[in-house]
Length: 554
Image (tube, rainbow, N blue to C red; front, side, top):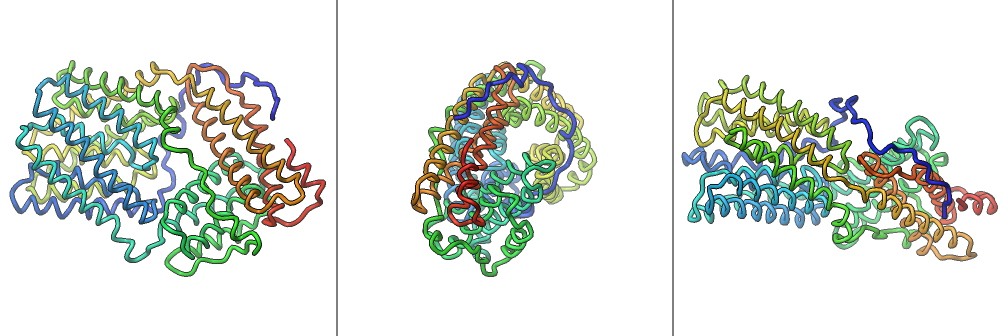
């Protein structure tokens, strides 16, 4: 195991970043899927209610329709299951909110319920890795429901409407399976191949190689999770798995990878054409595929305790502060706080800046479109549809850009029950945004995450053990292809987890110095062993056995 000293290279408190926080990035490759899906899920129920003269019920219909934002990166069999749980989770949160609203008029009690719901939603979404948009949409729906006038007799009908639109959202999200049944797996595999090619371009030592390597392993892990979440193995899935193996091998030995070939394979996965052959050694093909290495759900809950505490405390205090200022919609401050909490303080700060800037610009956009939206109920519905589409188009480029559309949409939703004074709505939104961001971030700083360093130590130990296990197999005359593949995959997962854990801990405040040198050494030796293991499996050109043994050493 690595014995390098733990040099204190990370100060107890770190400066919060500003540079690049608002810089737009590249859009998601599937930005159009959630954008089109949410419009298709919202439009029919909204126009039906418009025809019936019941636009006051649109809020409950949108609760189910917004479930169409989830699971677009999942294979369809897995997507079907995930969306069922998302709809049920949405219904559970709305049910608690509506019953609470019907039983008490105490705003303090309602804010407390909303904060506890937000914490539960945050933990469950992060632990289950449900993916974007995570807990924010669920918290928005349940928090808004808390402050909607309600009686117990109305609750079943409102829940039934939300359930019906949730079922419609499920159908909308599953419809593309009729045209391209393996689309999500193909995209995930193509992303892994392109990420591996980007790392191969650096030669493993060029500018930005560390970031490219981390992105590559994250993409490969996402591809494995996508493939392993499907049902029984098919010919297409097994061909895709071979390509993911090729991407993983390219990450282990970037100097021996053909970046052009990786990109060619990635391009060939567009559409519905045949999956290209990866050219793995025939003797290894049956042993290389589908090694599950994901941690169970319960093991992912422990590290989320600080996030749960931050969310509950921050949301509660933000709501109470809004009430103290006399704002009529404290759930806006609560949702603002809930949207901030990321893996560490540095990322939470970045999200706070993005949220405030996006909301302030969004308020100005609302002011510009109010005259159009007030032309009549159809115009109001069309404006909401346009903003829901725009939010998904922009949010993958940068969170603040998406907020520019989310903010006017949220303001317009409040007008389905009747037009309101634009100036009052804008003032309340601005105040709640600033209050929610300030109080929410203070709560994040107050609830420290001192166990982040302990998780880095555990990740180091896991990576060292995985490397030693692979090295022992390499020293054997005939370790067997299945054992070698299992060791290689386990080491790859351990190194990926180590990098993610170290990055998350590096953004936390008020903790002991992190063992950065040991992390770097563990990564270097681990990747050398990965390359040696891949070569032993016949996935790389042969080299001198003495050199191979040397590569496996720390």
